[in-house]
Length: 419
Ligand SMILES: Cc1ncc(COP(=O)(O)O)c(C=O)c1O
Image 1 (spheres, rainbow, N blue to C red):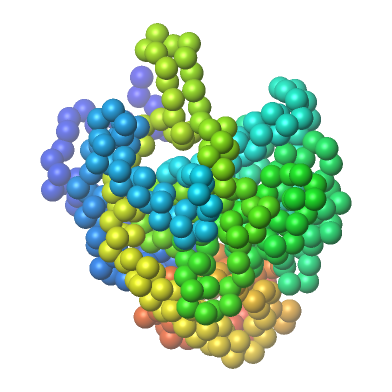
Image 2 (cartoon, rainbow, N blue to C red):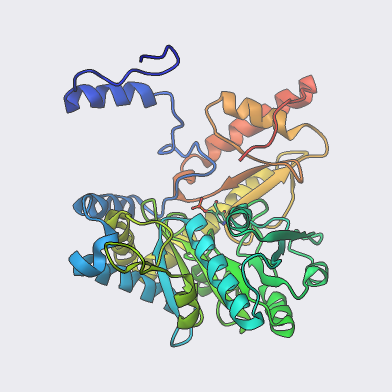
C-alpha cells in the first residue's frame, strides 16, 4: 500500500537523458568538491591521475572481485600487484601479506579479527572470555565498531600535550585480556602520528598485537618521508608492528571503495580469513568481510598507482607539503587562530581562545564551504589535498571575513561537532 511518507516506486521507467537531468537537478545544491569546498570526503593528486582512476573504474565496472580466483585472473593479478606495492612501501618483511578491502573500516575489522584469533591461539581463551583493545582517545570509531561486533571492550588512553597518545597511560591500561593496542598514522581528529616506536616497545614487552591505523597516511606519509619532510616512521620497520591499515581511497588518490590491510606474517592473514564448509554450495572462503565487491575499485587503484608511480607520489607529497605550509602560514596570520597540533601530514586542526570557532565554521558553511569540526579541543578540521590548492586565497579571505564578523558580533554557535 502506498504510504504518504514514502516515495512511490516509479510505475514506469525513464530513459538516461531524463534521469541524468533529474540527477543533476537533485545534486546541484550539493557541496562543490571539485572546487575544493569540502574539508573531507575527496582526495586529489592531480587531474590526470583522477581521470585515469575514473576510466579504469569504468573499464571494469561490471566485474565482481569476489570472483577473482574463479573467473577474473586479470583482476586478481592487479589486486596482488597493489598489495605487493603496499608491502614494499611499508617495509613488510618477506612473508608479509595483505588484503584489498572496501575501506578503512573493513581493513580494521579484519585486523581486529586476526588479532582476536591470535590472542585466542596464544592464551586458550574462547568465546565469552573477556577481551580488550587499548587505544588512544583519538583512534577511529571503526575500532569501536569492530569491538561491538566481536564483543570486545575498548579502553581509551589520554593524549599528551602534543596530542599524541600518552604511552605510559596506555601501557597502564594493558592487562592479560588485551588482544590489541594501536596507534594512528596520523589520527583523524588532530592529524598527528602517535609514537609508534614507543608503542612497538610496549607491544613487545607486553606480548600484545600492535596495529597501526594508517588509513589516512598509509599511502602518502611514506612519500613525505622519502622527500625529506622528517615525517615519523610508523611502519613495519618497528618490530612490534604486526598489522597496518592503509586506505587507497584517501591519500592513495584511488576511487572509492578501496583500502588495504597488511600483516607482518602470512599466518596472521590466515586468521582474518572467513571459511565455511557446511554449506550446500561447498567451501565458501573470503579474505574480506564483504562478499561481492567491485573489481572496478581494484582496477581503479591499480591504474592510479601505475599512473603516478613512485615519482608521482613523491611529487604529490611535495605539492601537498608545500600547500600545508602555505595554509598554516595563512591561517596563523589571522589574529586569534591557534593550531591545536602541528600537522604531521595534511590534516589541520585549529581553533581559538578568543572567539567561538564554531560560529566561524557556521558562517563558512553559509559561504559554501563544508568545514570539519573537532569537539576536543573545540576546533575546525580539514584534510588537504590538491583540489584545495587553487582555492587557498579564497578560503583564507572568507575565513578572515568570518572571523572579523564573529569578533564584531561576539556570535556564539549552537553547532555540535558531528562527523
Ligand atoms: C584514521 C582513520 N581510520 C579509519 C577510518 C575509516 O575509514 P573508512 O571511512 O574508509 O571506513 C578513517 C576515516 O576517515 C580514518 O580517518
